Length: 316
Image: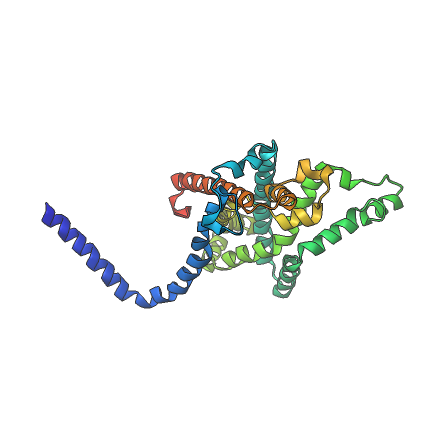
C-alpha cells in the first residue's frame, strides 16, 4: 500500500515537472502578473490587523494597542448600519442589472446598424461620459437642479409651472443617481458586449437566414443566448464590489446635504463623514473589512447558485 501511494506521488511530481518544462515560457510570461497581484493585492492584506487595533503612529502596525472588535462598534451601534447597507446593495444592484441590460440592448442595436460610420460615431459619443470626472458631473447636476437658477426650474417657470426643490426631495435622487451612473458607464459596457457580439460566428446567422428567421428571431435565438456567458461573468465580477458604492458619484453629487441622507447615504459616504470628524485608521479599516467580507459572501453564494444550474457559466 505504501509503495502504491509513493508511486502515485512520484508520478504526480513528475507530471508537474513535465508541465512546468513544457509551459515554462507561458509561466514566465505569467510571472509579472503574479508578482503584481501579490504586491498590490495580497501583501496589503496584512493591514487587516489595523481593524483590531487603536492605531498609534508611534507604535506602527504591530506596536498599536489591540482592541479586539471595538472598532466595529461605531458601525453597529450607530443605528444606521442596516439602512446604509440596504442603500449600498440596492443602488449597486440597480447599477448592475439596469446598466448591463441597457448595455446589451445598445450593443445589439449598434451591431445591427448597416452604416458602420454612424455606428462608430455613436459608439464614440457614448464612450465620452466615461472620461468625465465626477467633479464635473456634480457641477452639471447642480446647474440642472438648482432651485433658483437651475436649467430644470427655469424651463418649468417658462411654461408657468411650479419649480421643484430637488435638494429637499430625497426620493428624486434615487432615480437621478442611477441615471447618472448608467449615462457615465453605458459606452464602456457597450464596447465589451459589442466585442462579444462581433466574436459570434457569421455561420449561425447565415443558417438562420436560410431557415427564414427574421432579424428579431436571430437576436432572440442566437445573439442573446450567446451573450449570456459574458453577462454572467460581468455580473459576478460586479457583485464582488456590491458593498462598495460609487463614492465619487454620491459625494460629488449629494455632498453634505443631510436632507438627502435617508435615500442616498451609503457605507462609503457614512464612513468618510465619521472619519472626517475623528480620524481613526482602525475604524476605517474595520469598515473596509466589513464591506469585503459581506461582498465575498455574496459572490460565493451567487457563484454557487449559478454552478448548480449552469456549471459552465460559473467563475470557479
